[in-house]
Amino acid sequence: MKIEGSNSVNFKARCPEIKAGQDVCHILRTTYPNYSISKLNKRIDVMHTKNYLVGEQYKKFIRWWNCKREKKFDIMCDTLLHSDYKLYEDTIKLVKQFKVADCGQAADLSAFILKLNGYNATTANLKIKNSGLDIDHAVCVFNKSNKPFEKVTKDTIILDSWLGECDFATNILKKYKEQYNGYFKIHGLSGPEEPFITIKPDEQITTKIWYKGIEINSKHTKQLREKYPELIIKNSKYKEPEKVTRRFFGLF
Image 1 (cartoon, one colour):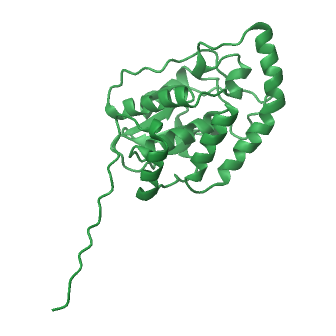
Image 2 (image 1 turned 135 degrees about the horizontal axis):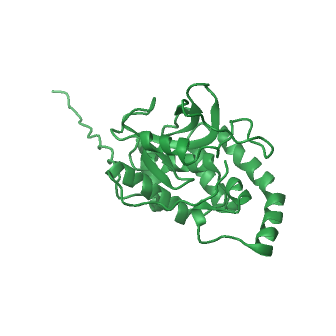
Image 3 (image 1 turned 45 degrees about the vertical axis):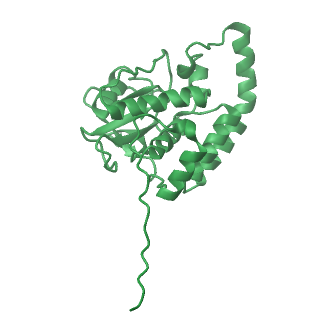
């Protein structure tokens, strides 16, 4: 994906759930600052709009980056082999260590933070509904009602922390088609030489679950909340698990 401008996170949310998503954007931007290959190649880092690298400083950084990025991302891709919440913890470690994250890592961490705060969030990639082609961009999705996400409805919220955007899916998908049209590549064909695609007026963008959401049971959720207090947001839906009272009945 190419980026030619920057987006600031708007914290004037219209509903608590969108505000929660915007809080997640803020956490990722401040707690786990990182760079993205896609952004750096355009000399723009959306998450660090005040930290542009110019002139020789930029050239030196890109030379260093090109030497390191392959190794870093190879390591990060290995974390996708996990099928439990360790995926999220390993991603946190790698983002903190290497200061690297693309849309996939941003979507995973967004889902993790929302899960710790009681939201049924998962990750998904964009898809052109008409042709069935998968777009090379991942996002975090959840429903305002907090019902498990299955498909896009009027209830669906898309959290794109990589861009610093959070809104109802109907608004975000329209923005992808209009404001970001020509900014995407097809998944699997996203190399430097591959062309960006233009989404036609009669084509629709939707989302497709990237992989089944990783569930975190109540015991582990509580432990992870204690381990990562910096990931707790104000608009949390989290509820402490009820304590089970055991009753012992004697024999009479």
